[in-house]
Length: 412
Image (cartoon, rainbow, N blue to C red; front, top):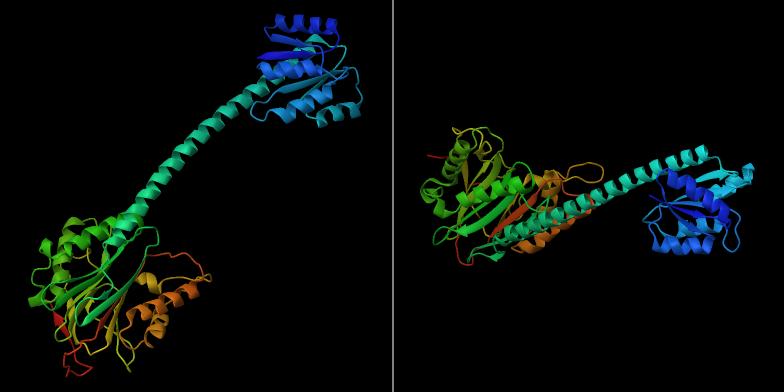
């Protein structure tokens, strides 16, 4: 460490130089404050030992300059003076001096004060090094977080791009959906696709948990519900309950520790005659919205999938009437909380949905979303939220079935 001695008396500087070099200190000298400033600018000074009373720039002014100049490197300052009143000591510390030593100087006192200075500067340097390492670590974490966040945003975009197209699916059926992940990507998933000339297959899936793990499991299950997987074989003959049983057995074989499960509602609609077949596996029951009638919960199904390989399921058969709308939703809708910790609940869903008439699904969807957002008033979603609306409105299909015509069918 280099010590800068600042004193206008040459004999004092000579004495201090001898005392310090004997103890191995590197010493540089300045005869006044201005000369000291130039040396500090050009030399790596650690400690300044300065006289108080000097012509031009005195010791207090020098210390003030040091404190104002460099925030990155700390210079330890010791003020030397023959003024030994308490108020003088306070004045010296008030401008930023670290220590105070009175003249005439005693060698042992000087060495002790410099030893304190060395320890403090060593601690400060260690802290500065630790801060630098912490900053480097924080920067690494920040960069890693940015990469992960970008990956999640890309994954969310891919996930959303795979969702079905809204609007008229064929001459009789139209759709609209809402899809809101709680954590960027969702463990919910929904899809609609054609499985025959007039038959549409649909489902809404909710995997337990949140985030990346739930999203990956949701994606894997959704792939099993594509015709190419073979799970869908037998849908037209046996109905959706049969599909759920096959899917459940498949998942139970791969999920022997039961570390997750999934709920879903699936079904198919014959667009030619309006026959809806639908089943639920532990999922909130869909609502059937019919003009001039109360909303009707469609109850049919069984346990969530992935728990019991021997679980049996039933499906309901309903003859849809023109303008009937089916509302499917995940439990994230009912469980959504406001600032008071109250849950939105099924009755609120009914209240907003039952006034719907006609086939304008976008208007109904907007009404449901706006009411939910107004109710929760900015409270973050605690669970993934998804809605799927399907409307049956054939242009030339003659319907003669009674509104109560509903059957429960066991898978075979």
